[in-house]
Image (cartoon, rainbow, N blue to C red; front, side, top):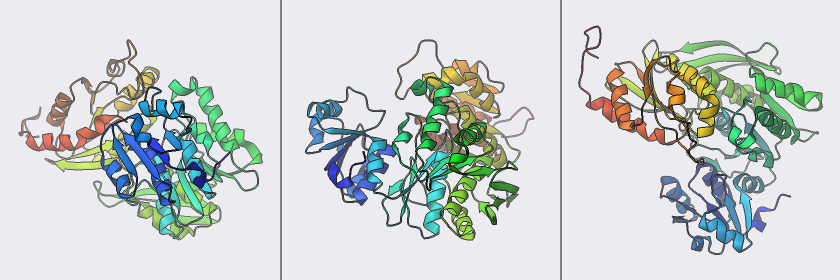
Length: 474
């Protein structure tokens, strides 16, 4: 049962600084809910929430709960957390982050964006598009968006756009009117146990759509999403998008405009009584698909196609999705959150396009022992799209180490230069030595590899020219 936002009382967030948690806190603060929270370390995000009126604490201690009557946690919070222990001892209401967000949506029409890959960017595109069209959407996104300035906001419009995370099954806590599914693949098997369980969870997600006016928007190009469409059947309103000839909204005429280093993608979307040319300022075929998903949502909401296209043209990307970190010695450095083989392959394919014939070098950090065990061969295949790769140690996140599961499961299968790199500093030096003017360096992974981007720019600036095998200075 969904509680009214007023009945939650003072809400305390354990792990307030996280992207998902801070988004929910922002939405609640926008509605006047008293919010407190804690995190292990100080951060820009914590300070921003404090400026909005949240009571923030650095470090975890039972006393931080204060007068809270509701406590919000994410899957990352362990049972041994002292604040969670005290909340249980006191009998306080404890909600998962997704449950708290469901309560905070306040009866608005919910657009829930799900999928194994692309949901953050697609959620951001939908939000930017609706804002540009004057629809004033509320939103909660699992990453910062330059065009929005924040990752969440409570606004006056009738629509709430939410990133719906399938990793722990929490996307089943929402009640969407429009459900977007970008793709469906086997992932998060540490939670689900099998690919079949992942697919079944998405079936349950689409079953949440109301029979009278619910709509599934799905990518027909993706095998998993297309199978979901077939299983969902004629009992639901379905709108598909993609390059496939049978898509309701079909992509065609893709071309690049401008220079390779700073180009726009132009393409046409046809279908649902609309034919509209779009221009997009972020690279990659996957971003064209994400934009097609957002455009399809706009059509469902009655947004003028030209206004939807203009809004999408203003989209400049999200944090950690092919995010530019700087340039030095003619080498451009980007950072990407990709942590599944399909995402890694998509990021490197986009990098190839941006590099324009120059080389692509990668520092990759595997995320989770379970994911590395399941997909080592697929990671190696995806990473071999680069010209050289340095693979760091596995980022454990919520998992404990597993004997015999190391980054060497990937590097032993690589078909390009590089290999296992337990020392990040040496990895940066080695990449710097290989990179020539015009090349791209990409830091990839969902862990703390993101911090290496700015450092790489500095390392590249400090190197001395040397001769390569052709005798030319690099």
